[in-house]
Length: 507
Image (cartoon, rainbow, N blue to C red; front, side, top):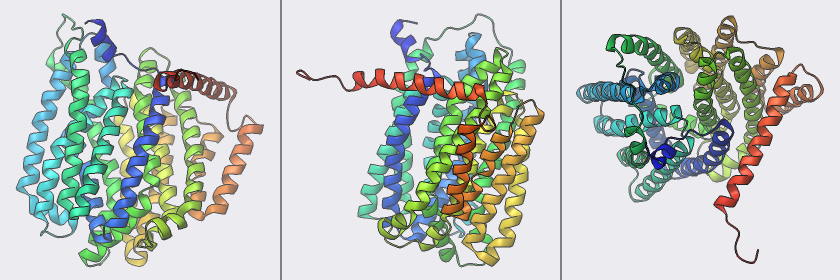
């Protein structure tokens, strides 16, 4: 491999990765937020509800279609890369992904009326399912590449790819909406944006992958697939449970609320409006989780297992406090956002915003905390909290939606998410992860967001006071790590800006 090809696969360090992530996330999510705001302004609640259901189904079906194999990249790619089997690993998993994708999309096309009933509450929207099936190809490619590049720790490439996808989707979708608002135009724009962004990433990374070192020792297929599929199966189960968990409330609004499909889709549209900002927090947590997973996997492989537990514990605290603080700002800005920017079209969305925020903050903590069981190769245990939370979510939605409508669905999701996180941490603790009282305080804190601005502020103030004045919230090791991380991140940021913004003559 020549120096140029090697540079293309050069992994980013954790400090650089976080700096890149923060910068890219601010820009990318700003574009996504602007797109979401304009969707709310220009689309009717019913059309917004259709897009919400189609997008949620894409996120559910894409990872299920490939049976969890790309989801195992973060855990096993580094394992095979260090042994010189990167090309073999990628070749075999790519063939598997392609075959599974073709079969799954064919199933979607054959049973389009049934899927239309499931997704949109009516069997009449078959064309919408056809559009979703076409878009699914691009989404699977995009998600697979994201998993691959994240596992390679090429976060600069991931950031560029996601930024380009967001920019293309926002521009094309909004341009089409101004001409004619339709589900097909929005779904088509999303698929084209995913495909173009994926092609750009492939052009960049392909020379390096093609020239990567190959070991002369072959891997028997039985040994390769027995280990990988066992892990991938539980990744698949976990993906199924987590996406069902995320989708069940909107689906039950459609099918169990006793409402006309049009009215139910309008309620889903109101729910979507309340999730635009909170989902930014979940997206950031998801990106951070994928970012730190390869580093945690590396530490686990070299035997630093106690360090992995400490790092996840610290990540949970930082993420929990940070998202809670942002959540308070969102509550303060909520009336202006809904009454002025959304033009007062989504009053129900504003009413359920506090508990939507609480549920999303808890969910963000969850996606970071689950890395411990992934590193410990206990995907079976990782599925247990999701199964418990999903069952509780279905039960609570079944009880609360007929009585309270949208409010019942949002509350059911927040409560079941909290139970799910508590179960996950108890299982992680039994597998060796150390949890202190500060971790549990961080986990309980988001409930204050559901109760309103004042309880949320009081809770945050108490936790910050404890963190500053006592070791109860942050241990000495955690304080040192946080200080070192901030120092390194600041230094990297200072080094990056002269390259991005060269000084002009005379200045």
